[in-house]
Image 1 (cartoon, rainbow, N blue to C red):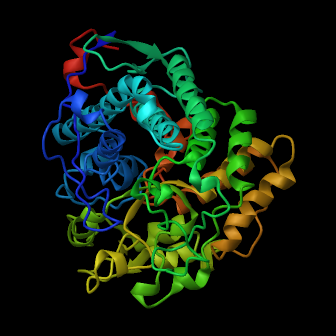
Image 2: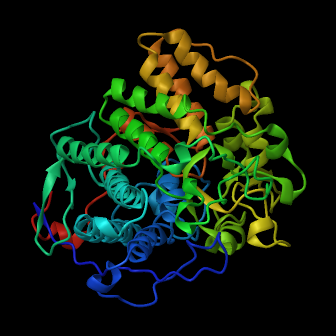
Image 3: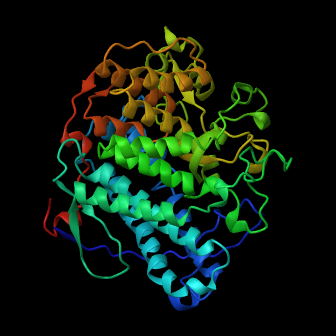
Length: 497
């Protein structure tokens, strides 16, 4: 099958109200490529436009973080048809009109961002001389890595998993800025192209400032420059590297992709590259538990390797999406307790205590999801210890990947990786398993707790070809009918899968 992608180019203007607002930009006008790419700042502007596109509600600003993948993973209690029209999505009715509209928007939005990556990459090599320092390598590396990251999510949504059929039709891997039709690649070919882009990005970004000993990760509210240097650079482009596809984010994405391809050696190597760098400190439980909202870390911010900066979603998340009424997104008390195993090892799980808040409504016992709650009396900068972001890659995921890749050769070490995360989250009882099958079952439980309302656990079910556990305990068997979203209808007209 060939695919035609007709997408506008988003070139966002840069209008900074403060050094923390660089992703608040909105598209102002179309700028011709020769003008835009005549200066280094023009390339930075185009790259910021890609990030800005990723933070929109149809992508990581909402849909791909707290939306469709979470509904498919059965992480919300959807008892009403009015729950933003997601009820049928939770039933895997892929012919429902609202579902079709959302998944088509995801497809278009991801390819739109990819097209902008390709526009940058098609112009950058011939302008290498205009860049200062390492900026050419960083911009090209970020563009390649983002192109791979976006394609990978397309593959995980719209194609069979590698374990099911590596030679099945995958997605179009669009790596040129052109009006030419891009042919479909197989799942294996798509993964190979994703890996090639990421490996190239990793080489280019070897001198990323985040790798420097002078780059100290902490909360933006910590102004002591001996304890936080993330915003110290006089160059805005080099600040807050964890809000961008930085070197360690590339390693983390490679670990994720190699594991999807069942290449555990390379997955482990890249996960350990992040872990052993010791750049990302675990969140202090006192910050996670803090009563004062302005001193609270709800998102485990320091552990984020890469995140999408989404302050524009503050009102949408608090007043609309995560409300406990029948038309909002929440989880009933009993399924929440089951998910976090509060009657057993999870009795002191800090995630359950800090991310879910009990309510009482008309005879029901809903748990409001407060993971993204902000202090309504404060500005965005002082609402919590951190900015409002959508987590993309966590330090804990690297431990989970290392554990999964290690179990067959060193079960003790694999369990230790998982126990390290469990301990920091308040689970004092060590994991007890006697087989790899049991280990994977327990690992799935841990990942579901850790990634709740982040859009990742659905992909793990798919990668492992495991049944999805519903809120009543009913398991939806693994099937491409569940795991593979249909291509957009107009693309099917071009030849179908």
